[in-house]
Image (cartoon, rainbow, N blue to C red; front, side, top):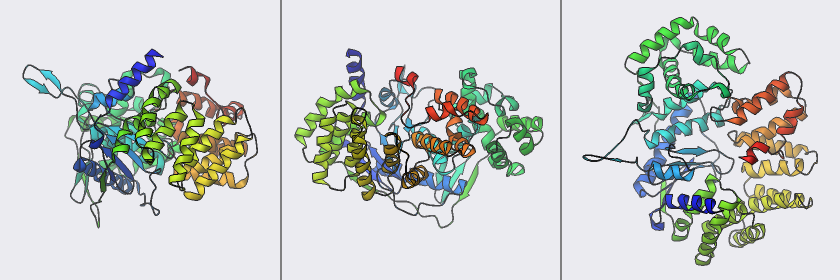
Length: 514
């Protein structure tokens, strides 16, 4: 418990103490929370919208028709330096990070890079990654898995994210192709045989060098194939073949031709100047953002809100509850404070307190989707001892859906209320799950639930396709290895383990131990 308190104190120390310093800039797709002032929040929001537009142009994705609610938007928290960001996840090597989940995707990025002391004062150090490059890189992953999810090889997934991590936004368009400075040493000192890159190795056999080369050589190969005119269309052909299930090397030979020739071209590209491609967007209009300063209560709740958004265990949540209750006493009618406290109480498994706060929120705002979502989650937890709670869980998700028909949490939760209760989900619940998937393809739990549903319908090939983006996720860790084995078993005609482990109620025992 002492270790938990120390860790929580370190995390709280990472966030700013001055409540009045928080600003929020809102656009069609983003909410940017910043301690850098009004201009900083607005500029980052505009830059993110422009990045989104550039990605839509490159991937052929149309703009969204319906306006997005706050639960659907990406929330970006911008404060401190990279050391402050690292403390949120207890790491000294994290310059920024991104968590994609239905109804609450978040990203954390520093306002500034840290400076080290030298003989002549403070200076920047090493090949650090500029904060916005981290955010642009991670948002590119998020965009790909939402708008064009597929079984991307690791080198391409990281390479494409690196390509747009260094995008330059110009007056009426953008430029791509600038080499990431943080990969310059790797590109200068190491060469990578093309067949080694194209023929993926298992995660357990990967070295740190292999993983790093997915970024550096992934950028090199993706950039070259995207920009070199003589290679136009080959990358799309290769990715299509990969998603048909063809062997990587055979798919590469069919798309790229002589691989030795490609390797020589790539080496020449590596030793030469980066090729910059400039894109002018027709009828370009500079996006705008509405900006406001957070009120005192909302600003005071930000530190606990961010920690809860990152994720805390029961003990860590319990250490946050006293401050949350103090803030409730000071701001008893503030919805941001109530929501923060409700989440902290729920994470600490104080379900009566979380329920009371949700009810209070509904007396202030009868259309609070978050209040209904948490009432449903409390019911789900209590259903382990009282199965009648599944009906309550279902009714709360229905209430949330009536307020916002496009909230993926309510849609998927309605489906889960049947499966977790051991009931066969009716047709409307399956349709709700499919709708949740279309809204939040980046959410792994929803994706796995849909794969499970497809397996129960003997639509095995479709289930494998749905699992593809998880199996090829470069940041998937042990989950990639486990689900890769399940996919191989399904292909061999044995889906017993897959049905067990993809079930919405299954818990990974090794994950619990960690």
